[in-house]
Image (tube, protein in one colour):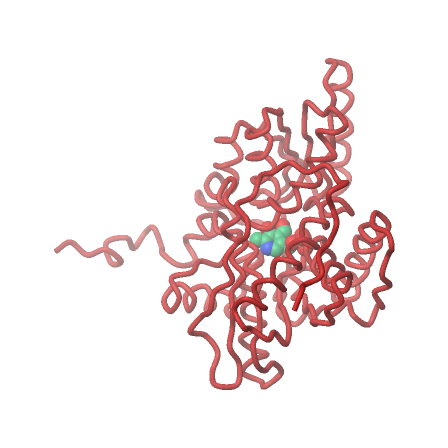
Length: 344
Ligand SMILES: Cc1ncc(COP(=O)(O)O)c(C=O)c1O
């Protein structure tokens, strides 16, 4: 059987990712459900993650437009910002990042380790804003003014690189997944992932439909209500489909998002997510993160246990590993180090 291919060669692309990432079996699941892991935590650049695929196209556009400076934004432990900072270093561009604190977590780990530490190591100029919206927008406008005055060519990378260009990276990932399933004799019944700014979900879903696959894509919201996430996915998906011709209609009913696993909100760990982190570390040697992938995995495990999934189920491991270090004290109290590591 010949698999359909996407023709995205007309789009400028910065080659940044280690591709293809593996699609691996796990020992999770039971007789009725087999869980496969699409290892996009292994995209390589700057400790990997889903943004590397998106940035290949977003930054392809930036380079085509002669950018010398990338300006982006996100939460203090944004994986997107860390991957953008790494990509900027790799491409010889400057990077400015406007970060905000989504939660009150005043531990030393949270203040300065994890993604923030890596942003600094990648040479990004970091600015802290008072909030995600007005203050961040005002700071970005200010940085843009300064950049133009200094003769720079700034390019604003949208939150999560979630625009039409960015999602093309995940349309290609859909092609990669279908090829791997065919080669490995996997017959997937669903693919689950963490849905944040929506671009990963939009790209995967759009790519699958463009390739003639009706595989359900189930997004587990990491922050807002499902209706808000569905609207986000719809908007990015339409932007991506508008870049491609001929466009394939994707009905609203195909945009599946569950908001049962968010807990108290974005970046606030849940007991089930932390349990998923421990379980995957101990049983698979795999690291999830408390903000995105652990909540999505908690959703998958819960749905599997409730009989809502069957057969070969794919989980998109979208990365986020460095954020785990910002939450180290959820797993290991620094005041009880002697207990954790007794002297022999
Ligand atoms: C580790 C991880 N997983 C999933 C997502 C969600 O991807 P998207 O913003 O494209 O919905 C993000 C976004 O930052 C992320 O960092």
